[in-house]
Length: 219
Image (cartoon, rainbow, N blue to C red; front, top):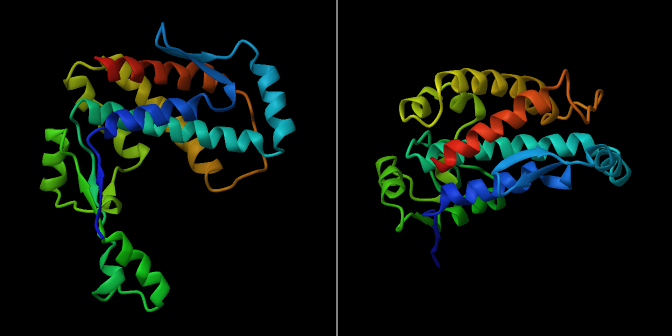
């Protein structure tokens, strides 16, 4: 049986997911009327509750936040018809080629994935991208990492979605987030759990960056 996954609403799905991750545990809040992310009024209490809930709570929170940040910037690019998608060519490991896995149960995972299909029937631009890249299965979709988007911010500036100053600010904020929060904590560094800001990086870098991206998503 073939299962088809429709990616027509991919930008909106990424956006919805991003907001949920960014406001996880209510340390930050989303003001839908003003369309901005801000720190919760009881942020210190929420941080205490987070640690009471889990001794590794700060680490978990930053993973949620960083993942949400990454999903949001991808939503912005895709909603503005800027594709940084490329194709993963993993599926041959299941049934063919020199990369074929020798453990049957491992190979069967890839064989199952090959039975799923992609579609974007209600999003002509995205369907054209999937066709151009010869992407036929969901697990062939590679949306890239934060660094790839950081280095392509001029594409948003060219479409007048962000200004030159905002591009520079976003690039620097993404650099710090990737170097200090994302790439360190995501690979399990637990010696220095910081729930708040390092010299104000949460309040002065990442939250303003998110709000720039929220505006760019709507423009």
